[in-house]
Image (tube, rainbow, N blue to C red; front, side):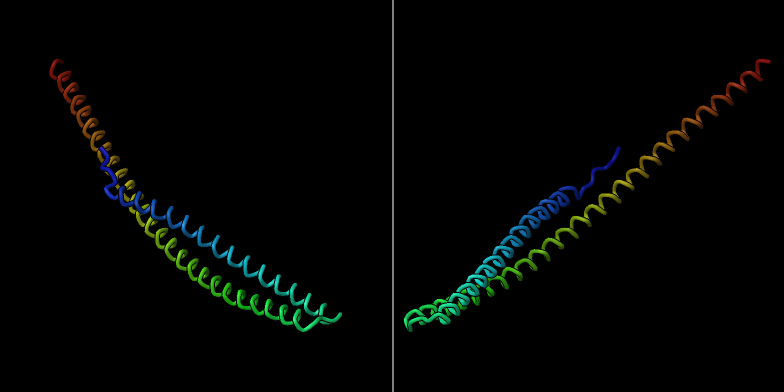
Length: 156
């Protein structure tokens, strides 16, 4: 009879942690992607607005409009600066999530390796038990045959 793998509950917990770490890493990757997209959008918008300002100054613009353009571009520059910080924080978060994922992956692999060793050991124990049973049966059969031969010899 095979012994159960006593670390199975820990292995199942490690599997659960790995699945949770996978979901968390996916969410962190999405957050980073979204932050990058927002930064790219702000940069495009700033470039478009800068192009409009250049066109407006080429054809002539009054000082109030020029000041409004410049204030808006300054606000976009500040938004870009803030979004760079958000993106950097997201990248740090992804790196931490990847570290956690790798850790849970290693832990699960350790339990899997232990389970594989347990299964191999159980196969060896089972094979040894089967061999012992076969040896015993063979021994009994040989003893029976010898007894039969002896009885035949004694009757003649």
